[in-house]
Length: 125
Image (tube, rainbow, N blue to C red; front, side, top):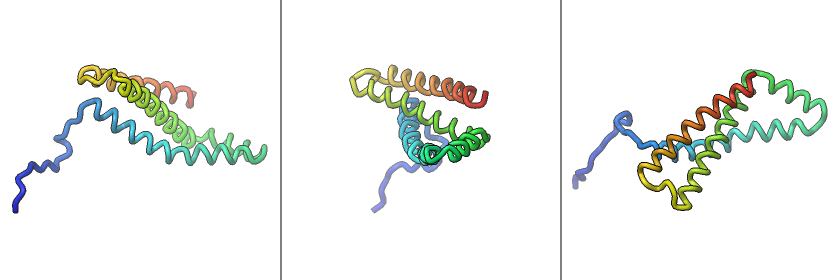
């Protein structure tokens, strides 16, 4: 029995709408935050052990790698928060139409980029 169904294995030809990209990105940032919080919880717990451990974490957080991890964690949190608010508003019955859903997705992604840049400026300067 031969099934006649379309097969599209070229992923570069698939174009997702902005609302789908925003929804997928919300899920991805949630999973990434779960793993990023390992570093946050470690730094928090270790810094509370003694004054010397606090000073060590404080010195460690001045490195470029630590600042990059902190910036990444902050940007994940920002997008997940913005995307979550968007989903909550949609759950209340707003922005469910194609035009308003696309607009809200584009606004969330644009606002996320602006806030990510501002978070980077705040961390590095």
